[in-house]
Image: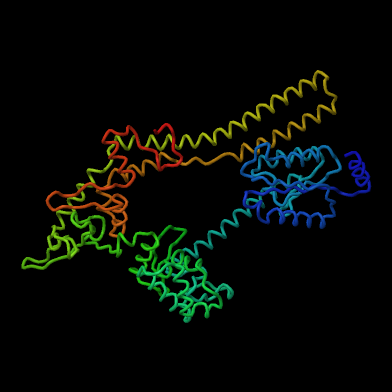
Amino acid sequence: MIEESIELVKNFIRGIIYGIIYIRVSSDEQSKGTSLEFQKEMCLKYFKQKGIVVAAIFVESESAKDLSLNNRKEFLRAMEFCRKHKPWIQAFVVLRVERFARNTEDHFAVRKVLLGYETTLHSVTETIGNKPSEKFIETVLAATAEYDNALRKQRCSDGMSQRINQGIFPWKPPVGYRCLNFKKKDEKKTYPDPPDEAIFPIIQRGLKEYSKNLLKPTELAIMLDEWGLAQVRGRKTDVRLVDKMLGRYLKFYAGLLDNPWTDEKDIKGQHLAMITMEEYQRIILIRTGKSRLIKRATHNENFPLKNSVVLCFTCSITITGSTSRGNGGQYPYYHCKNHKCPMYGKTIKKEILEKEFLGLLETITPKTKFLEVFKASILDIWQEKGKLYENEAKKYGKQLIQLEERRKKIFEMGENGSYTPEEFRERKTEIDNQMATIKISMSENRIDQLDIEATLTFANNFIANLGRQWFEASPALRQRFQRLVFPEGITYNREKGFGTAKLGYIYEQNRIFLSGKSPVVDPAGIEPASPHCK
């Protein structure tokens, strides 16, 4: 250390400027990637341009989301290095100021400490300085850059959102369609991507075959290559590509688009669809393992209980609906569709079954007492989780109190002469550095609190109005709603009405609650489970 300091002094006298590099990642994922190397490369390039000699490099490999005192050792070492080698270390270099501290207050507080060591903070990518005008310009530039970036992003997203609403996919289309590459011509896409004449019919054939529930994804990949896909694309079809075709690409193949900026779903695209909506629904059912429960996804507005959750009590097959004609007009009925069932041909009037179904929903609708307990249980769980964050904040607070006490003792020992002026300044600056680090950690530990009570109020309002929710839902949503309430269906007898069925989790807990077997909602299945709920 002595030899190193002597060499620094000699070079300082010769006019050589020394500086240090401080590198920090902002997430665990970045520490495993190339972020550290990129920062180091950019900082070394900056040193070379400015004629500064690297005295030391400090690398903080811990995540910036966990900035406790123990995880900022390199930051403290860098600060101490500047203090102990004052005034020879003249530059403290970071890639961006956000690598140094994440808010303006912390940034300028620590920067002030560095100035006391005659060390200037440098940012490789930003214009900063110590003069008032430079600080003002730095603040304005940072704000302007943030505003400009947000504005560009908003304009870009608005334009793409508008094109999606018009039925045009603004990005590169899935395999099977030709990308028109308008971006290279500085033009916006104004009409849909056309089908690829060679690939489109092969994938279309494959999807239609898969919708018959006769193939596995691996088998489909083999068949696509047998039909010529590998030859056209120049490589073997991987099962991962097939998974994309049956997953993220499927909606596009069905002629539908989603708008991520407005959360609007199932917008009809202008491009040529590969498959019909019926094939699309069948593939979804196959992929979710429900193809055996529902053979076809039919959403009949006139018969909301058709091919849904109502089962014949004799054969346990979903009932269907139809309309018969007579002298008085048309007569809608529900009936069993199984030709071998004794109940085949025995009809149930549409209005009677649907009225009884609404009555059934009323009987299983949770009442006020259950909803109060349900809300209290969830709030209890949320508070348990929130305590973890509170405990972290308390740890930082205790560390700061301890440091403040030590700081007071240092001042007392400085006043009574226990420390020489030099020793006092050294102890004081050391403790100030630690306190600055803790304050940064405390400010970065703040979390946004979810308005859980408002969320629960909305959920309770939905749960408490099952009949109304079902009656007002669209035909497609009614099917999903009915499956949510009766996941395995419910039998119906013409003489006795509806049987007993397994209910969805919330409604099953309500039934247990009403039976008196459980004083509160069973927390199993809600993570994390709180012992206060048991």
